[in-house]
Image (tube, rainbow over all chains, first blue to last red; front, top):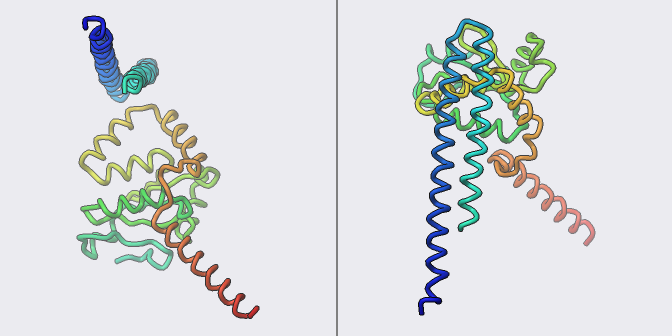
Length: 81
Length: 166
C-alpha cells in the first residue's frame, strides 16, 4: 500500500518544485524587465553620451536576461504538462 | 477637405469633420504585404479621433514621398507623415501609428521607444525582410477575396472550355 503511494508523493513534490522554479524564473524576468525600463529611462534623460551608451547597453543585456528567464519558465511549464 | 484623395489617400473612418480631415497624420503602407494591410485595418478600426489618413506606398502620393526622401527610397519601409509635414520611417513609423491610437498602445510604443534606435530599426528590417514567412498572420481579407475571385474566374474558364469541347 505504502509502496504504491510512493510515486504519487514523489510526483507531487517534483511538481511543487517545478512550480517554484517556474515562479522564480517568471519573477526574475519581470525584475529584469523593470530594471531594463529603468536603464532605458536613464538613457533617454541623460545628456552625457557615455552614460547613454552605458544605459542602452545595460538595457539590452537586461532584456536578453529577461528573455532567457522567460524561456526557462515556459520550458519548465511545458515539461510538466 | 481631402485634397489627396485623387492620389489614392483614403480618409479616416469614424467620427470626423471636414476641417479635421485635412490636418491629420498620414500612414503610407505596403499594399502588397498582408501584415501591413492588417495593421492599416487595425489603425482604421481603432482610430477614435478620426483624423488618420491611410494610403498605399504604391500610390502616386506614396511614390512622391518616397522619392523626396532618399533614406526611404532605398529601403522598404512604412512611412508616417505628421501633420506638420515631418516624415518618419522604419520602426518610428510603426511606433508613431501606435501612439496615435492612444491608451495601452501608446504606453507600449513609449516603452519600445526606450530601446536604442539602431536596435529597433535592425529588428524592423529583419521582420520586414522575412514578413512573407510569418504564416501565422494568415492571409488578410483582401487576400481571401482575391483568391476567391481568382477561383471563380478559373472555374468559369474551365466551364467555358468544357462547353466548347462538347
